[in-house]
Length: 83
Image (cartoon, rainbow, N blue to C red; front, side, top):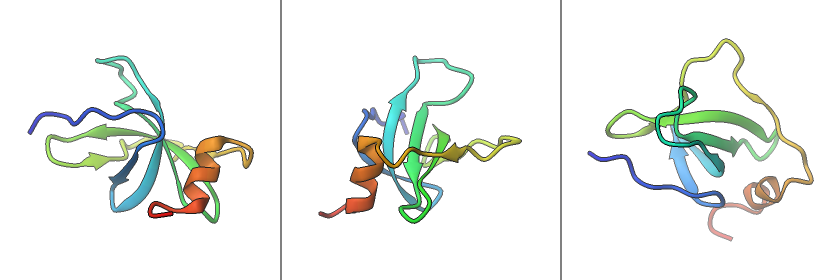
């Protein structure tokens, strides 16, 4: 299956987590497809990529970082996917 196109502000499911896309890398980036924020209780950012069927979190020594509460994508995440 071809990789779906995504853009900042879109909701996607990554490794079973509801996530908001915050950044999309240029095609062929070694970091993956882009960055998402997830976990409304402790908003966390992480790279994501496509395995041919699903979005996933690439293995990294550091599992991302905490997002700023003032970020509009964090506010979108906290409002919820279906708000």
